[in-house]
Amino acid sequence: MEMVKVTVDGREIQVPKGSTMLEAAKKAGINIPTLCFHEDLGVKAMCRICVVEVVGARTLQTACSQPVSDGMVILTNTPAVRQARKINLELLLSNHPQDCLNCVRNQRCELQALADKLGVQQQRFQPKTKIEYPIDTSTAALIRDPEKCILCRRCVEVCHQVQSVGAIAPANRGINTVIAPAGGVDLNDVACVQCGQCALVCPVGAIYEQDHTKRVWAALADPDKHVVVQTAPAIRVSIGEEFGLEPGQVSTGKLVAVLRRLGFDRVFDTDFTADLTIIEEGHELLERLNNGGMLPMITSCSPGWIKFIEHFYPEYVNHLSTCKSPQQMFGALAKTYYAEKAGIDPKDIYVVSIMPCTAKKFECERPEMTDSGYPDVDAVLTTRELAKMIRETGLDFNKLPDEEYDDPFGITTGAGVIFGASGGVMEAALRTVYEVVTKETLPSLDFTAVRGLEGIKEAEVDLKGTKVKVAVANGLGNARKLMDLIKEGKADYHFIEIMCCPGGCIGGGGQPIPTTNEIRKKRIKAIYEADAGLPLRKSHENPAVKTLYEEFLEKPLGEKSHHLLHTDYTKRSIY
Image: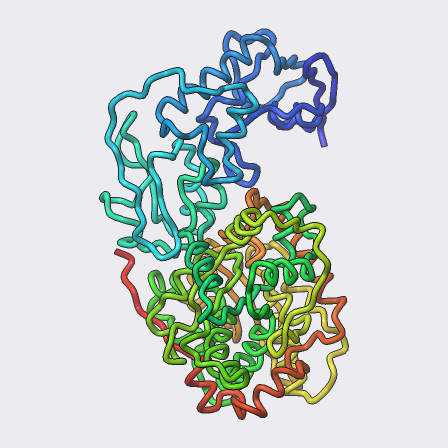
C-alpha cells in the first residue's frame, strides 16, 4: 500500500494514498466535527462543518471529501476555521425550528451536540420566509418532521442505495427544498416499508419512531391489566449502549431486572417463539420439499421485508413461509395458551414487545394479526424507547442485578438467540431440519457460511442424499438482487432467509444511535457468543416448546397452530 506524508496541526504522519483529510486528522488524534458525514454512507460535503485550512490553498476545504497529497499541510484549528464552522452551523440553525437548542426529543441529536461543542447557544440569523411543511404522522411506525430536516440526504441515500425502496427524495428548490415522498403525498401513500433505516442515520431526529411509551405507561398503571413483555433476541446485545456500555455487551439479566422494576407482571423472551418458529417453519419447508410445494420458501420473520415483497414482488408472496414472526406468535399464545394456564381473561392481558425494529409497530397493527380474538400485540417499544422509559424512572441500569425470565416463555435455546443476526434464522432452521430428517446428531452446530455482514451468502446442506441449497440476504438492496435472480430464473435455491435491515435485527431501525457497521459486527459477535454459552442450542430441544405442543398445539402444522401461528400476505401496489 502506497503511503503519503502529511502534516496535521504540526504533527507529521503517514496515511494510505487516497485517504481523506478527515481520516488523516483522525489518525493524528484530532476529531474534526461533521454533520452530514456518516462513515457507512457516501460523501456529500454539504453541511461545510468539517472545513479546514490547507497551506497554499485559497479557500477552506471540506475534510470529509478532499483526499490528501504528499507533503500536504493541514490546519484544523485556526481562527478562520473556527469562525467558518460556527457561521455554517448558525446558518443551518437559522432555517431550523427555534426550539432546536432546547429540544429533548432526540437524546443523540448531532446538531445539538455540535452546537454545544462549537459554543452556539442562540440562533443569531433570522430565518427567511419559506413553505411550512406539516409533520407526517400517517404511518404506523414512523413520523417525519420536515421542519427539523437539515437536508443532509443521509436518509435519501439509505432509502435508495442501501434499501432500494426510494420512498423519499428531495423536492422543490432553494429554501423550500424538502425531503419527502414524490408528489407531496404522505409516507403512508407510497411504498415505504417502515424499516426505520432513515431514522437510524438522521442526525437531527427529523424522522423518528411513533411513540408507544405513553400507552405502555398507561397499561402499567391500570390495575385491571395484566401486562406482559417480550424481548427480542437483539435487544440483549444493544440496550447497554444506551447506558454507556460498549457495543456488543450482553445485558440479558439486567434487561430482565429493569423490566420487572418498570412494573411488568411477567417478563418473557421472544427467543421462545423464535424456537417455535423454527419448528413450524422447518416442518413447512420439509412439507414443501416432499410434496412439491412452492419453492424457494422464504422466511417471514422480518416485517419490513414482508412489506417490501408485498409492494415490489407481489407475485412471489406465496413463496413466503406462512409462519407469523416470533413477535406475533408470542402475542397469539399469550392471549390463548398463557391466558388459559394463568387463569386470566385474555381481554385483560396487555402484550408489549421490546424490539430493535420500527416496522414491528406496523406489523402489530396489521388486521390479520388478531387470531386470538384480540390484537396479538398491543404495543411495540424500540430499544431507544425502552431506554427513554428507564431514564424517566431514574433506575441505574448498570447497577441492577442479573435476573431470569419468567416461565413458561422464558426457556430458550441458542438457536432462538441467533435470530438477531443475519443468517441466524437459517442456521437455527438447519440445526433442526438436519436432525429431524437424518435422525442423526449434527457434527457441528455452527453453519458459519451463512454468518456475517456480507450482502448475499449461500450454502448447501446434504440431508441424507437430498441436497438443499440455501441463501441469506440482509438489507433490502441485497434482497432485491436476490429476488431479481429468482425472477430471471438464475437461482435455484430451496430455502432463503431475508432480513430487512443491514446485519439483521442487530441493525434494526429502532436500535441505539449511532449504529454503524463496526457496531453491527460487535453486536453480531456477542449474539454468537451468547448462543455458544447456552446449554441448549437447538430449537427442537427446548423443553417448554415440547410441553406447549403436548398441552396445547398438539403437533407442528396442526389445526390449532395453523390458526394461531400462521397467516397470509397482501399484494400491494408500488404507487
